[in-house]
View 1 (cartoon, rainbow, N blue to C red):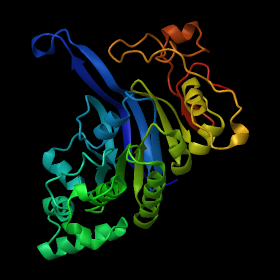
View 2: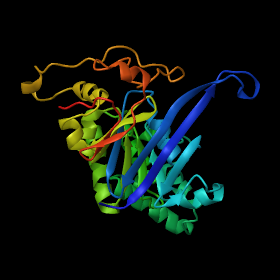
View 3: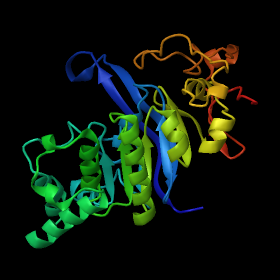
Length: 324
């Protein structure tokens, strides 16, 4: 197996909500709550779950764009949470992010050359001529013409803007990239083009992706491994083909059942509908967090939080994993 690029152990991000002065009496939103995972070199690790489960927060915490409440984050064995601002700056070149909204993530007042050159200048890439040539190379890498360097973001389509966002993330030669819902705002045909581009760049540059999405149909074709998140916690982790063939956690089963099918021969299959509302992250249920929506819940599920367990090379946090 390849080396571990980024790992987290018992990672938490909690937000105080309400309360009096100095946060006294505040309730805590447990956006990320005790997450542990390893992401391996050159793989695409997809993180899935319903909106509000903490996916984007986890991605930002792992890059220290948000500070963790507690826990550890290691990049190639180096502890990130112990680094000061100067120490993190030197690693920013290797840890990058592509944001969801290609319309909001680019400064409308800056030309494309300015947008791409900004991270290069920040990290002392070289002379103005070298930076200009690197900007042109970046556009070549993402399939855009060099003459676009003089244009502004409003002159591009959504797909082209996302390509520019990818180019910016790759400016300083990272090896770990968080893709935060980076194709969800695009039309389906453009999604496919951008995913193909990401795959080609991964092969060419040896990139590792942490791919955050709610779209399991994209995950199935793009990811090597999948982590399923519910209310701030990972409930299942495994290889993509195994997760889709035989989910072990009931929540995973319901997510997969909700994926639309293109094959008309399978459209008659029975769809499983997940009932009930997601519990409030400020008022989490006792025991298993999923038990209020789980049709298989038993008494122990209501009182005891299930510990993660290994089964067939996969992780599942459930008292009664599915047998398939």
